Length: 159
Ligand code: ZN
Image 1 (cartoon, protein in one colour):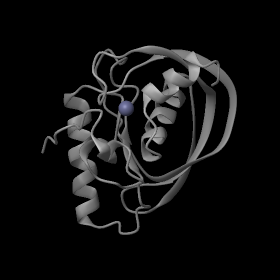
Image 2 (cartoon, helix red, strand yellow; image 1 turned 60 degrees about the vertical axis):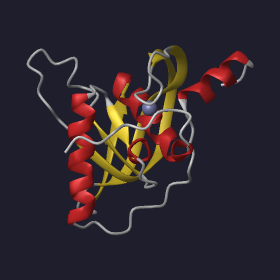
Image 3 (cartoon, protein in one colour; image 1 turned 135 degrees about the vertical axis):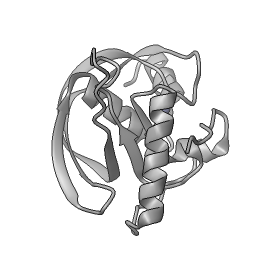
């Protein structure tokens, strides 16, 4: 089911997100709906607060737009944490909750992330390039941080 994507300045984009504790059918339905909504948008990822759910959860597929055959490799990340980050990269960033806003932002070049899948099974995985970049954007959402905050920080000369 497609879910409505919440736009800035809706306060739900700023709400603190609770950790995912129950990995039940309700959670998997939410993740499936978020994945469908992400592909329909289309976007590289979609975080739970963007559909009005204050949970530390996002869905993610930074590869599908680049694949000539459109292969889909969706990931569900619950309670994600960056355990290591290396280097820096600058890419133009946008957000489904901020239509029409794009800006070059600096983020870590590669990251190792620890998370749980939709069944609560822990995993650790490394990402680099666009995938690492987009993943850091989705993690920001779980902390109520939006691209516009990164732009303001950049304009002030901070990262
Ligand atoms: Zn976003």
